[in-house]
Amino acid sequence: MNRVKTNKLKILNDPIYGFISIPNSLIFDIIEHRYFQRLRRVSQMGLSNLVYPGANHTRFHHAIGCMHLMQKAVHVLRSKNIDISEEEANALYIAILLHDIGHGAFSHALEHSIVNEIAHEEISLKFMKKLNEEFNGDLSLAIQIFEGKYHRGFFNQLISSQLDIDRLDYLKRDSFYTGVTEGNISSDRLIAMMNVKKDELVIEEKGIYSVEKFLIARRLMYWQVYLHKTSLSAETLLVKTLKRAKELAKKGIELPASSSLRYFLYNTINENNFTDETLEVFSRLDDYDVLSAIKEWVFVEDLILAQLSKMIVHRRLLKIEIQDKAFSDKFKNKAINRLKKLEGYTEEWLEYFMFFDKVSNQAYNKNKPINIVTKKGKLKDIVKASDNLNLKPLYKPVVKYYCCHPKNFLLS
Image (cartoon, rainbow, N blue to C red):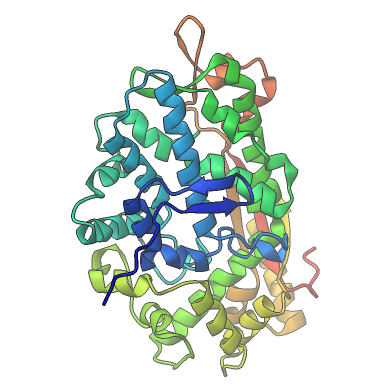
């Protein structure tokens, strides 16, 4: 039987960047691998499409976009006499391509509900090590860079820092798909201004305004998109739904679910028992499993799970109130007691249908600075180098407090 020859130097058409080329056959084979193809079925922004209908892009889109931007970054740095070998460049492409491969269904929801005490970065590393076995060690250098163990520190900064390739893609991509233009940064300009000084990734002085725009855009995207109150309500509701399902599963109650989702519902999974078998099951779990199960849970006998599921499927979300100050214990108790009397909610129901929590965002972490290199070769933190007074408050964490409750209930 004749083997069919495959053209592995494909060109993909991306709505953000236009044509994206796959640089070599190894990367083509990694993209074709079922572990990576799963990312087509994992949404980039969870349930944000309930607020921004266009936000249906996936982790697959994002990963491919990151690979494209990394190719640009390598080209720019080489043009500035930064020596990057072909092996190192290829490792950078692989590391950024796989940096999010450990994300679970609906991105962050699983981390806070049924897969406990293990972050997606750790699962990404497990996937990379497993792929390395299959590809005869060809991912070894990429793994070193991903873990920050390679002797050239700026390589890891390209993967994970305050101005990394990951952020340059997701801000621009999420801005495009949501239609929120405030997040539309100039990734090309920022990459063009990159340089390396003393083994540190820096931005040239003439790129300072692009960095300012990037930081402000990130802050605006967090409060306008990622932490939008309706997105927050939907995401929290999804976590509560999965937690309730897990709680019922622990009691031995049968729930309709795919074999992959059942594995995580009916077993306690954490960092210590996340085996190769667990990784294999995780590689089959995606948004489709979770959403299909939730559609079935609408009809289960447990009224709490059924109601939570209906709220997601029919977009009948909890009302959310957000404020700058914490809700007092007196206020919380008063609201809970009023709801008990008016609606007949039990303590068990209240845990799922009225709850108080907080969210925070820090646009800039001054402990891991973005350094600007001056024309005289000196390094300055962007906050000190900038003449924009608006940047100084960005390194202070902003905390907001919220309460979720049924829509037919007045909080005050």
